[in-house]
Structures are given as C-alpha cells and as structure tokens.
Length: 415
Image (cartoon, rainbow, N blue to C red; front, side):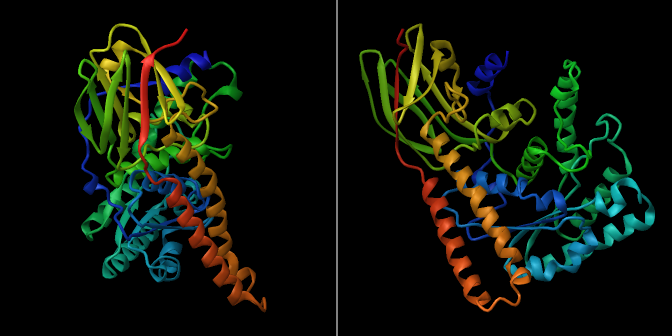
C-alpha cells in the first residue's frame, strides 16, 4: 500500500495553475532574513526549509538567513531583544511568530495578556518600519486542538488582532494558523481510517504545542505562501513529431534531437525544485507543496502509444505512459526509488539538506559563543574563525545548488 502510494505521490501528474511572477517573492537579492519567535522558531526547522526553498529557486540571490528564536519567548520578549537579535544583525526582512506563550498555552487567555501581546507586536512593527525593515507578523502555529473547533478560539482571535494591527501600521501579515489548520484537517481525516493509535499522523509532539517535522513543514509552507513564493519552477513542452520545442518557461532548451523513438535535449533551469531528505514527499499527502510551490514540468506530445522511461544526467527518474507525457508531468520529486534522489536537481537538493543541517548547528554555536566563551582568552580569534568557516559553508551551499545543463533522454521502456 505504501509503495503504491509513493508511486502515485512521487510521479505527480501535471495540474493547470497560474504562475506567480518571481518578482512577487518577498525575499530579494541582498536581503538578511531573520526568523523571530519562540521555541517553535528556535527548533531551526521551518526557517531552514524556507532557506532551502530560496537557495534552490533563486540561486543567484545572495540572501543571509538568521534564526532568532528563543524558547519560552513572547511578543514582549521579542520586542525587548529586537535591537540586539534583529536590527543590529542587519535585518532587512523579519518574520515574527508568537502567541502560544503569550497566553501561557491557554492558561492566561485573557484581555490583560492579549494586550501585552498586542503591545509587543506594535512595538516590533514600529521599530522595524522606522529602520525600513520589511516585517511580517505571523499568527501562531496551530495547536493540537480539534481543528474543527479551534477556528474561532482565543488564540486565533488574538492573532487576528495582531495581524490587523501590523497592517494598520504599514507592516504585513501571514495567517500561519489558518493555513496549518487546513493541513491539520487533512491529517485528522486520514487518521479516521487508522485503527492503531501509534500509526496516526500529527503535526505535533506529545505536548500538542511543539511541532514535529510535518508540523514544521506545514508552517514553512504557510510562510512561503505568505511571502509570495511562486508555484512554477520551470516548464517545457516538446512535440515529439518534429521534434519541436513549443514552450520553455524558466529555462533554456538546446540540442533537441531524435534518434528512432528516443528523444534527447539539454535543459538549463533558472532555479531548481524544492526537495529535502529521502521520503519527505510522504508529507505532501497533507501539505500541498507539489501543486502550490514546486511545479517542475515536462510535457511531450505525439509520442507513439506505450511506456517511456526518463533518464536525466545519467540518473533514472521514472517511467510514464504516453498519455501521461501528453498531459504533462511534475518531475520535481520523481524517482523510481523513494530512498534515493531522482534527477540531478533532486540529488543537488539532498546534498544541500545535509550541508544545511551542519551549517545551522554552526550558526547556533556562533549565536551562543559570546555567552558561553565570555572569558575564553581566544574568544575574539575563535569568533573570527567561526565567521570565516560560516562564510565558506554558505559559499559551498551556493555552489551545490548552481543550475547546470541537464541532459534529458526519453526512450521506450525496456523490458
């Protein structure tokens, strides 16, 4: 059953959608993006996913990402440390995610604590606007409460007021909670068909507040959508009868040719699809990333009836019927082996994932260095060496995701 589902999920068929212009994405070349929030932010997961998406889709943009999450923090606490942790670090974009601690996990859901939250949001937005920092106030991550009963609870209403306040002051807002709640409803619906409690899916750890990997991905999805992240990576359409190139968007196609029933061409993309570690697409059962953030399309018309395998850069990507080729295929995460990356773009992203895990730990060490080694005799030298290592690590990440021409070969399936 799992293998059958994986084959369906991974070999995603094309859907029709209107592309969002790349210029609509709020993260621009030269930006320093700071994620400000509580322990959910401090987990360094949803921020890493947003960084991964940006690096892959916009490899020419030089963007620095900083995690300023702090366990147990509130909007008032974020305001108190805003200068040190955000403004002094050169932020040009900041996402702000508070709410659950502000009302003590629901234990202080009253007007007094709501006002403290709103005062904190006001101060953050006003100081960011004064420094020309583009600020996005996010509603809190959804809790583990019944998503059908929490749509108008105190937390959502408080966050609604915070987002409205941000907009009235010239900031922006992202309703993370409602977006995540739609994902949560899909999870709950799937769980109704599962009898063993241990096999039920969730967005949360056991406390119903902190997020697991699926919850962190759902939060990253919500923020990326709120930042205007486009759905389309690139798209190619080829008429096999010629062969003739009839469309190339977001990429350049050269060396198109045919020998017998085998088609081949080179494709150089402007950016790459969003991928993570092995089996991560299992989460796409609930988080609609392939359709809404990750359309890497290839359509081939007028192929003789039959099955055709695709190889790209010497890597097997999958086998598809002529009907599916004619409809168009989303190749973003396609692979014949769910434990291994498919096309070279997928392999590049997997390498990025491994390197990013190490770099974000390096970033955490650097963040703690001044307080942990305050009296160390070589503290200044260690800090300098740390900055140089971090810069080299970032340069390596950019090298890993640089697009290069992929050789596509489509041939009748063997055997």
